[in-house]
Image (cartoon, rainbow, N blue to C red; front, side, top):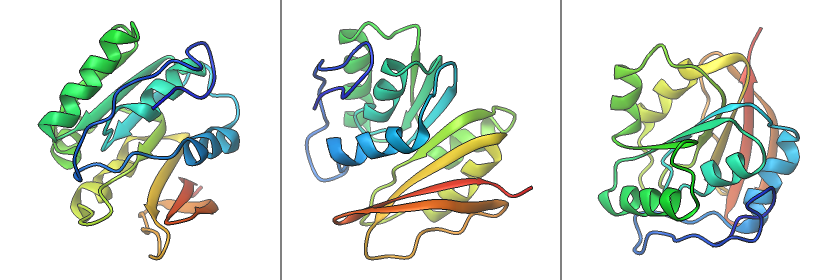
Length: 177
C-alpha cells in the first residue's frame, strides 16, 4: 500500500495479512480526501484502523493528530510498525481495543474527523453506535460500508454525501443542527 498525497506521498506501508481486515483501495481512499478537501490541523479518529492507512493519509495531508484503533493483534502490530517506519510516533497514537469499549472509556474525547471502516462480513453494530458521540459539532464522520447494503443510520447525524466504489460505498455524515 502507498500514501497517495501530501508530504508522505508515494511512501509505502504494510497491510495486515488475512481476511480479518479489508484494505481500502487507493481509489476509495483518494475519493474520501477529495470530498473532505482541506483537513489541515484536524484531529482524527480512525476506528477499525486495519493498517492505519486513513490515519497515515490524513497526517500526510495536514491533519494534526490521529488516533488509530483496532482490536486485532496483527492489525495493531502493523499500525505500530507503519507509524515507526514513517516517523509518525508523535502524530499517530495506535490503540489496541474494541472501538465501543474505547468509546465508553473516553466519552469526552472529540474529533473533527472520524473514519469508520468496520469489517464487512460481521459489522459490530454496537461499537458503531457509540462513535458519533466523539464528533465535534462541525465535524464529519466517514463510513466505509458494503455497496450492496443500506448504510447505517446514526442518531443525531445526517447523510450529506454517498459515493459508490464497486463493492464498497463511502457515506459522509454530519451532525443535525
